[in-house]
Length: 232
Figure 1: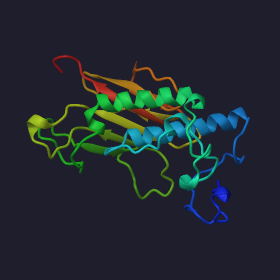
Figure 2: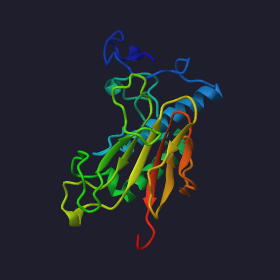
Figure 3: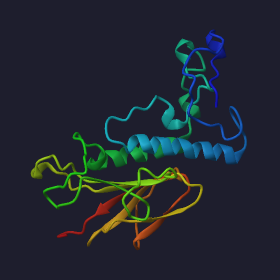
């Protein structure tokens, strides 16, 4: 995808030239349902990546509903339909998905911590505060040139004092492959993993995982939380 800043009066020379995006074969709006859904999938993936990350999420107004500036990436000088947001025409499904992500973030301290995670051992349970994993449960090989999918297991920061360490445990899975990938879930002891976020759909519903593995949809983001049984 290329910038379309012609209306800004700078002969399309303004704005950032490097746009790391694609148009799925058609520039601009499309009536092709396959392309439209692929674009919506990409939007959900990016929203999930931002809202499941540590730190303060930064989202431009309208992004939560798929707002478009028709390729103009420097529309500060456009006080018109290019930069205005028509809230009535935004994508309700994407807004619902963003709302679910926001609620999930607010409910789980592990993905909004105030301290850095270094993989150090926690004093409360002897486990690291963060683990990078492959889908088969092995340690992630960062030097693999074909690496395209990864998992992140988050726990409360080990550097916090024992009384302040969160007991929240969240597993994030990012599947960039064009096919389903089997994800081997970490040992949950006497607890149970709950699949709470699935970017392959607008609608989110928490589902207990039966068994030790699940299939993560192609080019999607998934988030799981560990539900511990009382007394565990």
